[in-house]
Length: 167
Image 1 (spheres, rainbow, N blue to C red):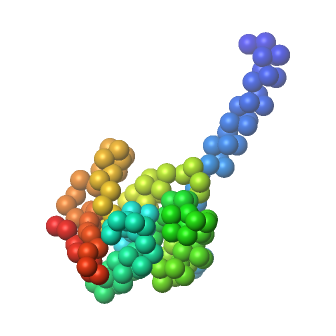
Image 2 (image 1 turned 180 degrees about the vertical axis):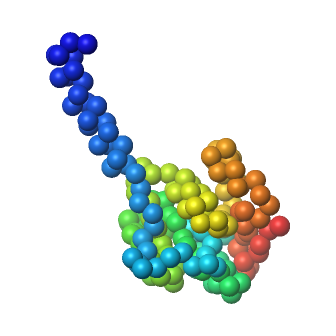
């Protein structure tokens, strides 16, 4: 390799490494001193808000209340586009937490371009948590083998004003 080749390639390589570092998504926001509650459960908010058909914060909130009634503390993940589906505008953690009645510390909106499924499943795997979603996560079963365990993903519907859990 000649010096001129190196001088041309070095900045590109450095830029590539910087982009890789910047694309990494931090874990969901939490208070500096808090840990994941022992009764936590991960909720795919972008999926659950469709359980009655059209996207609905009310449906998601009712599912979250049902989970809390079973003793769980929901940690809700959203795609970056969730706010546009609910209210035709971007909604961050603060806005979504108010809409669904969950602490802002327990809401994570992934950045645009980040695949929410990966963030959801990585967080669940890292903390040994179940996931609430009707997503089959077929594309992720090799990377997250815990999905093969019975009960790893809780599924349900919202019909006639009630949450119906599937077996």
